[in-house]
Image (cartoon, rainbow, N blue to C red):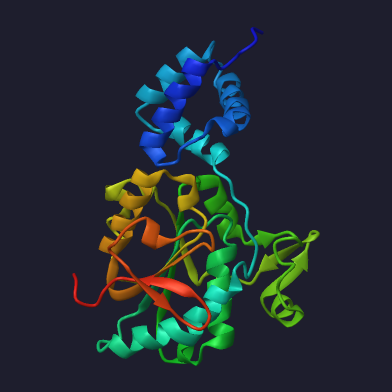
Length: 280
């Protein structure tokens, strides 16, 4: 078998193509990571070279190989109750403002993107059940999406390692999980509480069904985008949100440096970003 290599020109072609498709931009520091996974897919597809593989990738009508690439190129590193202060802000401040504006008793819609393996959306569900009295009076829809189909399937299964649940209080672990096969299976009620779907947030057509959102959790995703893709994402979120709704970003991210569409709101537990009430 011939040795397959990725030269500088190949890397640049792939980097630009992947960016156009996903908004994710690989810096030169990620070169080893990208090359290794590209070569893996070239070998699996029995392509003779990068050139042959890249032509197949670009012109494949089904898009299956691009999805395979996305699944191995994305990083899914998370755990339950990560950056818990934002969940506290949700139940202590955000939901009070949201419900005060609702006159039609429409469901509260919370969107977690990216879903990764499900720890974030399931954490939201647990936090609402444990800490928000309004859960008995309001319908809540928890939506969660990711570009990675393999990780979505994993999230739907709801099986987690000890590392994923290490920050959960013992009573929460006992209440909502069952220990089996050296891991933890989340209960069926919680699995049914989250609606998972595959969405590329850089694709306007795929995002279009997400409308009338009250709270968006988008944490530690935009750090993988460049400024143009970040602005595009912010505009997409803006269009999907109700007036007065909120966006929660990761601790190292700032919407103020991305877009002027949102106003900064400082609550006791966290800083979040709000779509103004006077816009549609």
